[in-house]
Image (cartoon, rainbow, N blue to C red; front, side, top):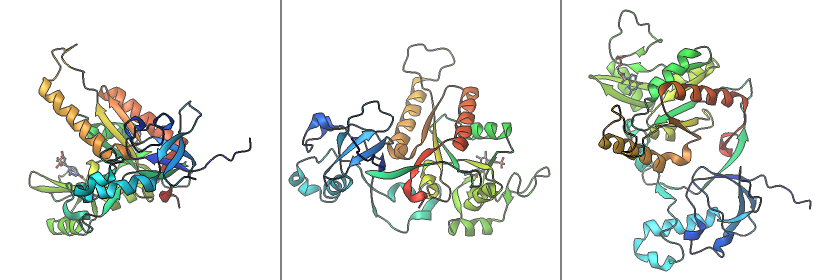
Length: 332
Ligand code: 5GP
């Protein structure tokens, strides 16, 4: 057989279980997948049902998945015209990949992205390709997001302190006065309140916030300046910042740090947090998974600070040596 191997790869952005899909011509032939799975699309001959394999799956047979067009066509009516839902009786209620894109984009950075309200965004598939950073290229940005209790800032600082020649933070801006031991551009860029507000207005920050009546924020330029020194820049941000950072310029590699949360009451030691606290941690992790799981390249389950540091160090080293899946739009 001289079948040409398909070169079309898609990252799944939604959860699909053929057994729940009443529209499929054959449930047994369906290929289940989760957000973030990489699918090799071996046939797009049919406009409605593609044939695909899951990358890394030992199963060599292709299965049916809904085509991008089909998945999108069923989303819009479902959400916009609630009343006619029944006309689309086929698979409504099962295709939940549609979201209003701007709604969750207004985190600490306020109105930064509010210019195109309500523009629909379909979370179906994203075409991806293997990408390996070449030695002469700008190192990829590493974005840490964490759920409650993950302490990603501490993790970031430790990994950088171990290897300051290769990794660095983006130096933040602040409106607080400089302390005598501090140097402009090292700990912070010290700026006036007016300058800070102007930068914020002009979308210069990936995020900002207030602490004890002073403003703090990290600028896009601060990331560029680390990368210009050929160092890998690590940022820890609220997940909303991903909407700004996910560009071909930064090619962010997103690590979601999630503390290991004990199952329930069993094996409880004196040091274990009260049940309500654990419940909040679970909810926080779940919320990030639901809203941002499809943008995460790697989940790091944090047992303790030392092992999480070692794992993150390993991830960063591989990032410089190996190829990873990135949206094809970042390369073109
Ligand atoms: P300090 O003034 O002691 O250097 O920093 C006080 C606090 O400011 C930090 O603990 C942190 O919570 C906050 N902070 C520092 N840098 C940033 C930043 O880039 N963005 C935000 N939102 N907060 C920051």
